[in-house]
Length: 132
Image (cartoon, rainbow, N blue to C red; front, side, top):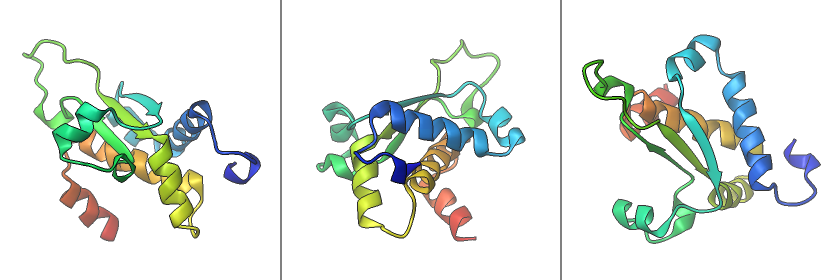
């Protein structure tokens, strides 16, 4: 699909790639993810970058926001919906720098990484899984 754009993919194009990547995951994995909401923006907001100590907005391709599944309790009030943000411009920049992978593969990688945070995994946990 990335070769078919002929122009940089729009926010809607990236959202369609993310949805296709999610639908391509095993059904039990999707069921475990539950009602997580996906959103595609061009860049993370300045306050998010400041909170994370990131100066260059191109350094953040995705973000999980919410209470991870491991810390939820049926006794707690209903949490805000968990959200996964994908940032279009940093993803496109990373894709252009890594000519050996498709845009679909990169979007899938970022999405799965953020779903890992939804499951309560740290960056180190996710890196170890990917390395194995």
